[in-house]
Image (cartoon, rainbow, N blue to C red):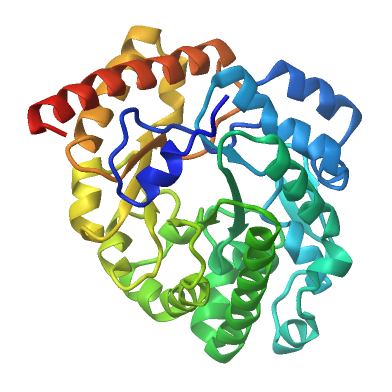
Length: 354
């Protein structure tokens, strides 16, 4: 079987004959095989076993036929190297035992040491680099999203403590952003060196900020991260998470290759807001997977028709898969995306004489 590089081509806005598709959280609880593994091991225990983490990463490649793998990991994994004690609690998420809320707390955070603390993740990437016949995407959590967990102590809907620190102690906030920015840069560089073919930065909750606050308190760190990675040839993706449509016009100077869109904004509008330089990725509402298959296909077709108007489009969800999603529907959706997009793109190529 030849290597499938459609995902990389789309990231670079090159012509493809079939749209690439992958799904955020595609290695997850919707898969009965993964649920069986989770009966024996926690998420963090799986991550510490490279062979097992690689196996879980590859499950959706074998079962769904997607065009990229995403490393089985968690955005909190590198935080352990900073000296943060946390657990991933079922039905809650990351829980920080001693939240970071003062200048002293920030000062205590040590620099990330990938070789000493995270060698199991690097080994997983090396295994996958040998085994996969599609590109491997590795990832990191963005500083704002990681900070929200560190400060709140657990997932939040209001981000009240996070915003309180941001507004009341800006020097402490920016010191924390600097340390988390350094963490992301070092972590992703090590992933690319180990064999990752693309990297994605998840900023799942930054849509909680106003555009003005995003520009002041977050964007400089994001620009620094992508600038520090810009010399590397591997595509870089920024996903500003849910409800982030109003932030998109401020990403023009980001030295990323792809911007991920959530389902609240059409692909064409997202392209207008971020500018022509970027490829775009997204953006089916994951919960449409609860609908009958003909409804899923109808919505996917509309998104693809919008996305295929220009090169540089990757089909994905607007957020991650949920446990109740249907494995069979995901298989059928992937096959439909490939078949429909191939038909349309072939016709486009014939008309243009390519």
